[in-house]
Amino acid sequence: MQDQSVPRRRFLIQTTAGAALAVASIAGADEMPISRAVTAEGELESVETETDVLVVGGGTAGVIAAIQAARAGARTTLLEQSSLLGGTTTVGGVPFPGLFHAWGEQIIAGIGWELVRQTVELDGGRLPDFTTPPSRHWEHQVLVNPYLYAILAEEACREAGVRICYYESPSSVQQQGENWQVNVTGPGLNRLVTCRQLIDCTGGADIVGMLGFERLRENETQPGSMLFKMSGSSFSPGRERLDAVYVHGADSSNSATRTQANLTGRRAILEQLRAKREQGDSEARLVQLQSETAFRESYRILGEVVISHEDYTSGRMFEDAICNAFYPVDLHTRTGVRPVQLEPGTVPKIPLRALIPHGSRNILVAGRSVSSDRLANSGLRVQATCMAMGQAAGAAAALAVQNGDSPGNVAIEELRSLLRTHGAVVPSPDEA
Ligand SMILES: Cc1cc2nc3c(=O)[nH]c(=O)nc-3n(C[C@H](O)[C@H](O)[C@H](O)COP(=O)(O)OP(=O)(O)OC[C@H]3O[C@@H](n4cnc5c(N)ncnc54)[C@H](O)[C@@H]3O)c2cc1C
Image (tube, rainbow, N blue to C red; front, side):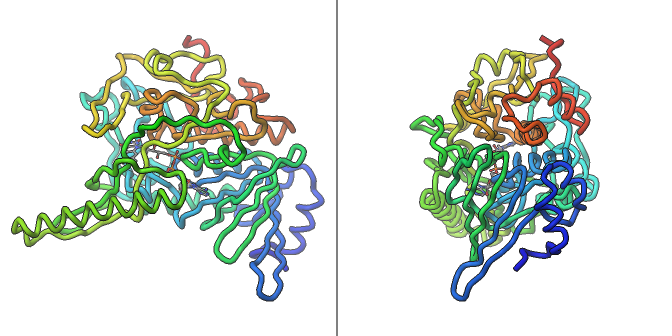
């Protein structure tokens, strides 16, 4: 039995075509990479999927990584455990990506910026005036309608030829020569994915952890937040921000700790509502509640380079810098947050090696689990930066497939050139 609507003829073309990039150019936007399914009475459906690049996690970074890999010609599959793209940007209720601009200039663009701009335009919203650096950094964050962002992200995936698999997560990963074999489970389905390149965009480096590569995490982590709106009227997405309660000790490590974070967050909101009612606020109503706690901090990878606080605040130029970052150092604690602004003119940089788990081949990481110390990470974790890392990882993975090599061996100028072709702003070594 064939999986989904893959016609038998295409299945034959794809299994015999060999060269991945040639296959991708044959396949149109809606035509999916190889899969075949076997079902016996009483068994879960079993599906086999062959793809060049497997992106795990369709959140802030993962969506962009998948679109970039597919636009660069790689057959790309995107696994997302939830039912919506966008991760913390959408499901988490934080739809105000920052920061694409620094000191009056655009320092992050590309696919993330394209989606953000499209969302604002279709929603009839307005972009901030970026020409003058604001006194408060968050004034240059872009408020987007999260529902529209998620649908436009799906559209961009579809047009690029990305296969989206909602409700699916890897249960094991093995290396088979130069390929990965990934066992994936979803409701009613087992999927065996064979791929050349993996991109871990889970926000907690889950796949890197499954493979046994070293990850970093301190005993104390920043609180998570559960987002909601309590008011007498309705909430207007894309125009206003939600309220938030801190969830101290929020831990995204596994389903049990995530459950605990959700229970704690919702209980705090219930207490707030009851308190308002008891104080005589008869208008108080819960009009919006996100479906899960959003996590600020989890595991980071130990990469081939660890971006330090000093690297971040000095805007250190790395020889393999592939994107910019921009945000104050922004560490939330039990007593709140006091952002520490960067010195005027400073634009931090991210090297490709910070996306590569130390000692690994054929796997990249993008998003908040980038290899960095805790203080650097508190600034690097923001959404525009995660999107830029996602795009860089998607491009590096596609080039690695094309060259039959690991992303760490991709020629950096070739990677920068591909990224620029796809609209990204890439730091130049001449800036050093
Ligand atoms: C409360 C809060 C406020 C913030 N405020 C701002 C702000 O003002 N501006 C800003 O720019 N940034 C802000 N941030 C930071 C920013 O939103 C996040 O750091 C960023 O979105 C993380 O992106 P990511 O791609 O690494 O992870 P996410 O966007 O969280 O994406 C991870 C995705 O992976 C999926 N996933 C996880 N595990 C698996 C698995 N095993 N299998 C399949 N899928 C999986 C998840 O469902 C999710 O979709 C805030 C964060 C929080 C929590």
